Image 1: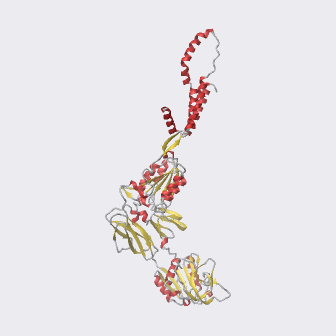
Image 2: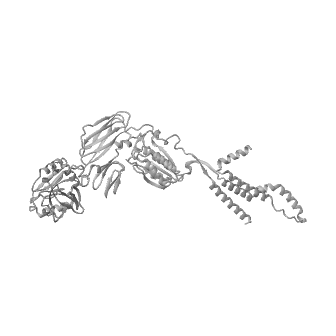
Image 3: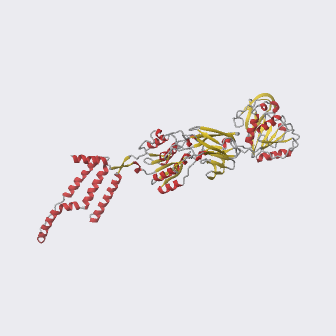
Length: 626
């Protein structure tokens, strides 16, 4: 009884369906067939009687030996045993990852992976671990601001070679998105290995949720925290925020350490009023300085201590060039309001022309206001048209006899009522038609008299009266632009508004295609649309593209403009991050250990069964019975 219980226990440990062993009863008829054989018919042959008696004695002694040594009988027994075991579904317990057919290696290459402790960066450790975890079939995914597929369906050698060629980025970290992205390249029972410091900065989503989603699909997910491999906490002071205006740059510097730290401040081309600051633990200090022209670099340098993360110690700044813009005002009646506005702007060099005498036209901006139509020479308008076609901006002010002047087709408006009066004596309010960078917060006031005009096709009305008469109209012409300004100085009060110079400053900036500061200073990890395909010299090399991912910090030099990208991410610079133990269910003890799972061997037994059947047929053929 004890032996039976022992055999029953062994069977239950290795067979999923023990009832299948009832198939072993098929051995009984097989044995009976071998035991019950037809009795041979005896005939007496005197000459052979002596030999037959001796042979009979030998047969009785060797019956059992022949029974056991019969190859066909043994093969048939093995076939029946294998068949019964196959029905019982044999299995063995193995580590979960033994069943993995494909491994997705998700490697953190974000900015924080460049932290160096104990002579090795987190990224270098991640690559070493990824090489060890590579399986026979692999996909490689890089974690940065967006997940990036490096390779798919590659063997161990190719995967390790691809890993050697990956370089870290200067971007925030998007772990959740990268884990979800990896699910596109694995199936049930495959494995995803995530190697990261698990400082999620690219999204507010919890990467644990992504892990659970994959596990619900039967995918094995292993998380390896690089911070747990470091002998000490990281030390860092970094630039965490930036605000650039036309007048001033504001920089925020944070001390992540537990002690007061002193840093030196360095700025290209500018003598800072403060060259050194001391920052309290976990505190932020603000530094201000005038906005430098064009491209510049601001840096902080540790004073008598080591910074483990120098990437956030540098800051690149891009601002429009401070070069003055040549402006030509053509008028027979100068305006003190225009003169005052131009002096307030300060970035224009004003030339004046009094028809018929007008200087050579090589200016970026040209104004025509209150001119005597009889004094304008035909060659003047032709020169203006040519200059606008090449990229200059022309601003035409309204005047009562506007439509009697030949503007060579440059005027962006026409008479709204060709059969009625054009000069209207009627008090109306003027308001922005569209909220643009030019008209934002503008109060154009009232107009007592105005011209009743309508915009031409392809024109854009920036401001109009309450009775829908266009007052400020803009139209592109060639490489330049033409603006109709319908607020006549003698019949409106906008000239006295504090925003009057601001309006002209904004319009001039658009006219000379002056870049907005927000279009020159970006954070890393952003995809920038350049609108047209062009050559860009980036920190990581030269590219020819219409869009570019700002994967690295530094200066990007393009054909149309130069712009910069900076990390400036407070969370990414917090290299010690949140305590891993607070991340529920991620790094608890044994979380990454492989569980034991049953590995069914039915397929292997069936293959063995077919082999035995083949051997049986081969033996029968060899014996001559087939």
